[in-house]
Image (cartoon, rainbow, N blue to C red):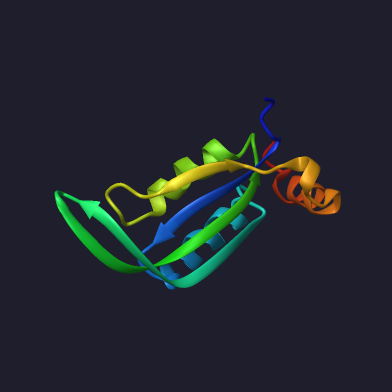
Length: 112
């Protein structure tokens, strides 16, 4: 199966303000076209042998395949967590609006 030319990056943050600041940086630097921040998510996870619960914010970034590795590398430098969640997911081009995909290309084209 061929990989898509477009990616979502799924990441979680301690709060919406930190996510927004990182998203702003990633968009300003041309690594991502867009950052959607969803506050108020509850995470249940295992950390250092204990099950923890925390309130977090989800951030979904849209970018292209060429910029995704650079965006994730930059995201990790901006993130306060020791092991931040940063997962790249293919966007199904056949099931997506062509104009939206073209917009992603235009928004990150200064780097590719």
